[in-house]
Image (tube, rainbow, N blue to C red; front, side, top):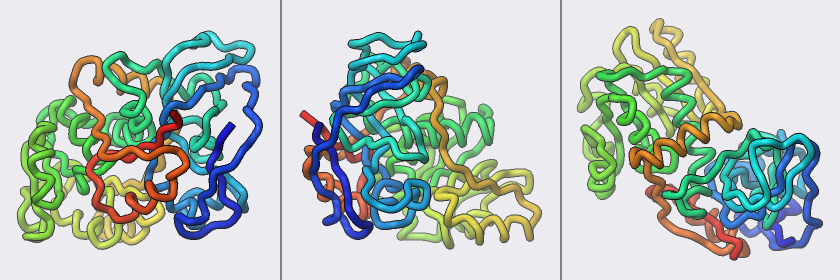
Length: 313
């Protein structure tokens, strides 16, 4: 099979197209013929030697955790899927899944059935970003109707999904984004869009119950100024959360760093939102597998609305 690999950490140019043996599923695992693979910030951070590089160990390795495709083989004990099923998932995170490849194996419970209303390309953009938003909003924060939720980088990969999930739970949603992306956010149902370039968001936004910070650094610390005393700050990426967590502790405010986990039930919940037409996955650009380096370059510019996806066809 074709696979993207790297022999060293570094810039996008270290990503190479190579060949590997097609993996065999172990008991309780499925093998998926990958049609599309999502590209996430953790991918290019890991490629460069940060992100999950310490988990994967020294190169060579293959990045990528988001996949969508068709079940090609099942291991002993699998009852959730059969050969030919359309699936999407986020296997093994944060261990190596090798998503940038034509075949992937993983535990069957790291996958879910792809809903009919979601294309393979869209489905490949959903797992990691969608589960991140889902686990933050439903499991950690347990967002309730009427609560005010602030999403930073609201038009990005996680952000645009978080906006929709929070709305589906009945929240009043505020989002920060450049003014050129405000029309997109309003189309997704956001209640208030703030241009962070034109004004300090902490001065423009009324107090909120939850901040989902997808930027880190100074933005996370400043976000404490817009929280209700009983509110909560959720910090992603968790590696950049130390200063915000310390500042929150000094103020007696709740703050949590999180890292997404594989979750078949969560994927099924996201699929139901898609089926109910309450969740859309926005894909801004696709790249053939062999142009993975170009996808990383595009992602690292930080201007993408929605998701970037690789295709294997």
